Length: 115
Length: 113
Image (cartoon, rainbow over the protein chains, first blue to last red):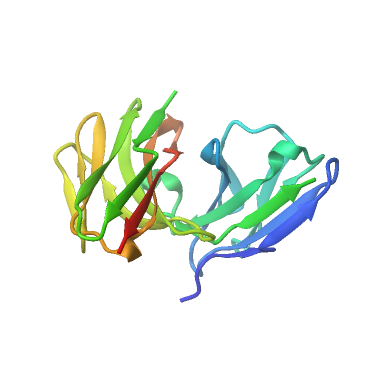
């Protein structure tokens, strides 16, 4: 059974640009969550999508947005990149929405560097 | 606001030297506490879920326990392959039918042969 796939693995952008990250969940999983991981702040929740609807959102500015498609694949977009956006962006999938206490399956992440 | 604090930040052990990692939390309405393991360059990998005080879970050399204010991850006779960052996360009610997951910053465990 294939795991969670995130693309691209590495990305280098400059300030002011925008970026789109992609996540393919485990087959059959309907929930996709996104997290930002930095050495100083650790893992911070961005948002969760379940059946194409945003179910929950963390405390990030509106520059961070996402969507989920009918096949459960999800994309995350960051507009007007800032240096502080440099981080490892992790996607996680689960069978049902996070409210069930279901464990998460994480991808290997996209390492974003903003210059 | 939910808070999760893990200690120590880093821990070095000799192979076979048992120890414990701590996760203390402040949350309104704990639904579950999760332990994950993260290897360099990879995403976190699920280890355990604990739901109520007094609960214990075991897997190979790892045992997780839960009280009303903290959780411990006990590592018995660790091996070098146990070296990783161990993350603790608490799940709590965030309104409506939604829940949120708050992670600690992790404990970097290094086991020397």
